[in-house]
Length: 449
Length: 151
Image 1: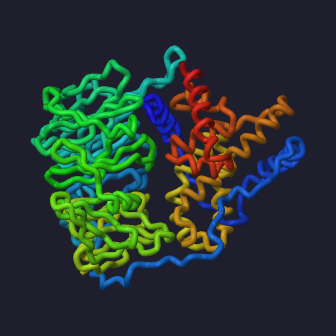
Image 2 (image 1 turned 90 degrees about the vertical axis):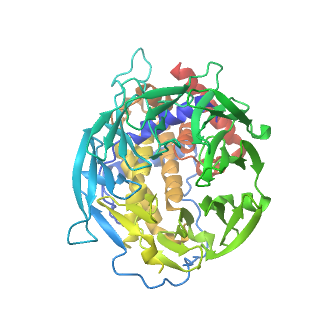
Image 3 (image 1 turned 180 degrees about the vertical axis):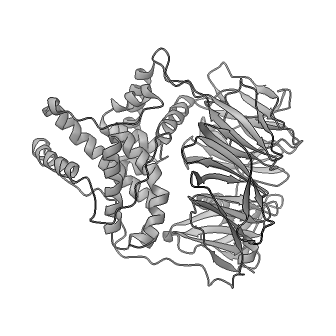
């Protein structure tokens, strides 16, 4: 997908995502309302079917003929009494868009109507260890665009939509976001007004801990950095004039900023220092065409980074390569074939799920693979989805059931996740599960002892 | 009712409603979402048998919406005086929304599936009951019209 398409995708997503969703309960089968509309449409349908000769067909996709029972992971081991805590939210807030800080000491949460974002400290000094109290530190009023945590948990980044409400000269309004930093010491810092930016879910600090990337309001614009203090903006890569698009990808081991540059038929990864001086450039394999660079997994010290080359939309990946020492290396075929359930990191080795369900590691330096004890979802028809590796523990879901397993010992247990699409991996092997009215924080080791 | 339905509903409803309401209007969008869930609940063994409920439900929602758009287009051609407009929420990007509304129903469905749901060509083809080979052309026609409308 080229940059025009990406811009279109961004606009369409924004357009649809900004629709308000009224609270309407699920009607049980056979009790639907609005019969007048149904009846009216039925009459119209009969007439139209006659007029256009449309053959009426079922609108549901096919389901398998025979029920396939869920195949749970081996029996769970005994769980301790208090393995998780619950953060209850005020009625006007929703956990669906909340973010627990990486160190699990703070919580950023948004109002249901996106009118404000609030930063709380999680107070665990009370008498109920599984019910910490939330102490408000500061808030900011919206409309709120998105939230993100600085990876050192020092500030919640909040984007506030300041777009003009009406279009000018028949053109759609340009989306403009202001960035506010809600510091965990209680201060609110407003980034300079002239940046139009949104951030990713977890803002990646430079190796010196001083800068993090902010993105343009549309893809293909310049690469900018915002200081950790929130007070300085630095444009590292200006907007290209040759029709290509640029965007931040990652930091490298030595502190260079890696950004992608994409043309319609090819792309490259460029490494620049803090002044924007080009240090090296790596072209994407030419057979991939104009693809985007995505870091799928990386060593803790960034000595290797696994790049997934995307054609722009979802899982439409062209292929994978290891970026090591400024050069691309192919993955062994058996490892690349395991891409369906994702790639992770375990002890600086690449972690993946093999076709037989066993978890394996690929040692980038030695070029060897190793089979681990843990088996994850033998039966992929049960709706297997991997969440990730937290230390030596691995979390996944099968259908609506969550599981956590120990990659070393192979033991696993059911984890009562309630909203698997909304989970965050936190530090110290903790996992946040975001519900509508509350947030559950799981202490994972307690589940697989 | 199996309590797991409430959870599926809570998780899947927002994107389904937004897309349905975007395609056919708020009132009909609500009907379509409820209809999709009703169909899912009537499917014996849906929970546990369908690996990706959202994918299943969005297929139903987009099919129902496109189907209603087709019927509406015919209805409006036949009885222009009885044309019925669903109430719509104020748009944040009125030009784009208007341009998408001018697309034929199938192209509208394809654009939403591709750009909003990240659906691949196979899923778009299956949902809209088109050949996979025709999806690229359908999308590029839609894009060309949108581009022209928006410049």
